[in-house]
Length: 120
Image 1 (cartoon, helix red, strand yellow):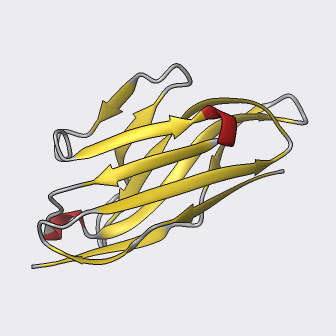
Image 2 (cartoon, rainbow, N blue to C red):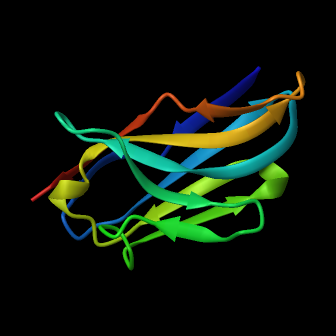
């Protein structure tokens, strides 16, 4: 069983910054891609950013130049630095990780979600 625990969400004014963290724990044999999705009220969940095990990253067009994803493989942790936040960034942010656990199966694990609210 693999658990992902997120932290760092909150309320911030437009133009401000937040840093999200997501730590994976449990019986982890290997970790593949990690990243973040978000879901705003009434909208579908969308990919915000992802990062491969080697560090290659991809971003949604709406966050390019403002958000930076990084990971610490030794800590099984992924981060999302969010700068120049806009009200439209308001959403619940979910981290994910592609993990091979003790059962030797590759599965996508999800965090519980953390609320990010940007006031105008």
